[in-house]
Each structure stands twice: as structure tokens, then as C-alpha cells.
Image (cartoon, rainbow, N blue to C red; front, side, top):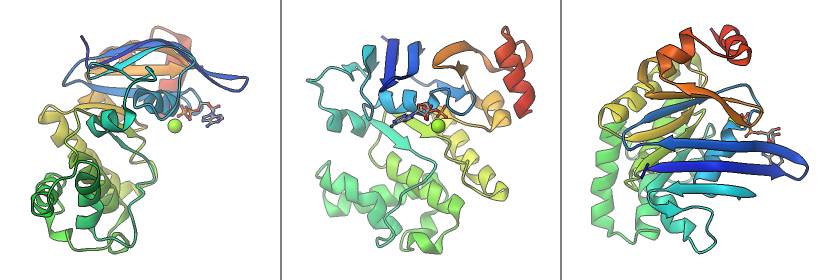
Length: 242
Ligand code: ADP
Ligand code: MG
């Protein structure tokens, strides 16, 4: 079975249908980028994958667990599905180390000595081991976002869900964050990311998913999606972003 399987998912907010029958399979080790206009349902889809939003119908499976089964322990599942948002939401009153070690200690009940080493390891992965004792305000936006990625990695997730994590950053800070994602990709981390960084999507994705009006309008390998769109909607979108 695929690591993530989404089958005919429908989701609305009140009268507003946001996902209109989305199906998608994501295999272990894949880098799937989701592209599409604002309002097409990209964030909602990511949030449904880790159960932050309930779906009206259809099925979502992640790492062998049915996300939309009421009996599923979502807290446990979410430890295996890291999610990082545009707003990195670090705790301002805690050091980088505490931001990273809090969840492993409180949620996973790991020992203080263990989690210090975890913090060192994940900070090395994002190139910020020297900032372990800093407070968020002492870091640039790009560095804070890298700490947010490290905080997710500290839970040893099977999949990383990343929602426009570079969109709030100054242009000169975006590259460092994308480089961290490329390193993770090389190490085999499965990632599902919503992004406007088309160059990155084209270079790194195994599969690109174009969402339009709450549907997977087109999906396929990056070269095909970016050079041979099959629908006028995708062609128009690509023209607008390149
Ligand atoms: P995208 O990430 O592609 O921009 P979203 O998934 O955020 O799109 O939103 C899809 C649609 O759902 C939009 O019309 C948005 O306004 C609406 N929407 C998203 N979240 C909510 C919510 N919690 N309540 C009501 N409407 C929402
Ligand atoms: Mg969004």
C-alpha cells in the first residue's frame, strides 16, 4: 500500500465545496509538490491528510492508518506526519533547544539527556547547530523556518507536510530553506509540499499535482507538467507563474 492514499475525498466548509473528489497516491520516498491558484484547496488537502480537517466523504490513509476513522488516535498519527506552515509558530519565550525538545519530551516522554542530542542532530541537518541556545527573535525568518523544520524532524516523522513554508520569507532567505528540503529529499524523506517555487518543484519533485477548483486537475512528472500541460487551466497557470 502507498504511504499516503487519498480516495475520492470530498470536503466542504458550510456550503462551500473545497475538495471535490480528490484521489492521490504517494509512495514512500516521493517528493510531491502541489501547485495551483490561491483558493484551489491545496492547504485544505494537506490539513486533511493529518486530520486537522475532517472530510465529508472518501478515505485517507497515512502510514497504514485510516485518518478519517473516528477510532484513529490522531495525536499518535501526527507524530509520524510532520507539518510545517508558512508562519513557523516558534515559542518566542523558549530557546531553539526547548522549542525542539518540548514535543519529544512531553508527547513522546523521552528523557532530557536524549532529547538534547536529538536537538543537536536535527539542528545539524538544517545547518543551525550554532543557534541551539538562541531565542527565535535573534534569528532571521529563514533561520526560524529552518528551526521549525528541525522541530518537526525531532519527532522522526515518516512524512513531512509543508505548506508554502517559504512564502513569507525575503527572497534572499528562501534558498537556504529550499536547500534544507533538497537535503531531506536526498536522504529519502517523503514530502508533500505546497509551493510557489516552480524552479524547485521542477527540479526536486517526483510528482507534481496541479489543483484546480478542488480537484486534481492534472498530475505527473515535473517535466511533463511544466512543458506539456494537457488542459488550458494548467497552461494558463504555468504562464502566470513563470
Ligand atoms: P489554497 O491553499 O489552495 O489557497 P485553501 O485550501 O486554503 O486553498 O482554501 C480553499 C477554499 O476553502 C477557499 O475558498 C478558502 O476560503 C476556504 N476555506 C479554507 N479554510 C476554511 C475554513 N476553515 N472555513 C471556511 N472556509 C475555508
Ligand atoms: Mg494555502
